[in-house]
Image 1 (cartoon, helix red, strand yellow):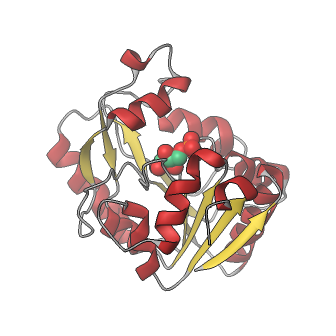
Image 2: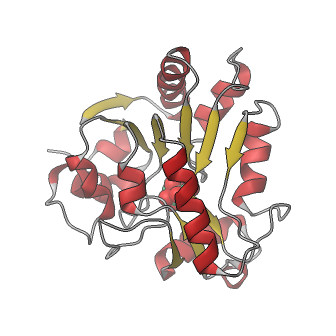
Length: 234
Ligand code: F6R
């Protein structure tokens, strides 16, 4: 694991941008993308750049089940607002939250993951150590699946909704094994609220109870942290 400590989200955005730009310059590439507050400064830097993604593919980690693409809190909508409207990709895949048939949706999406090997996967980190919507206890061999969100994640994501009761209870997420297929992974975490999960991810035992700890087994991981997120590392 390569750990890069940055001053703040802006610097983290620049470092993340550089990694994306390097990957893009190697040729037509596939990017695994995340939503949430963490990657926004990377997407802002990409939007401000002259990079051209029209020959590249993107695959998002997850989507709320029950939210259609035009719902303002859907991850489809988030990606359009923060990246795709300004920087269109050749193809962009996000799980279909409007498909209520979980079995067909997860099978469809995992086929997409297999057909488009991810060159660089961007990840945020949940306070409970989740990656994607893979909550503690998710098997490391999981592929794309339907997830029942934990109270911790529902509470954390309630800030984007009118109230916690408006947060969907289920989601579709790439599994841990789907994520680990990526050739390179960039995980980003900011703020003191992530410090405990960061410490466990890097220094703790590899355990399904802390999903991000699986990254210790991946050969090519870069981690961007601000001082607060890195504060518990020994
Ligand atoms: C989002 C995702 C989640 C977030 C994580 C951190 O697509 O998969 O794992 O990365 O919940 O969220 P933020 O960045 O909002 O703190």
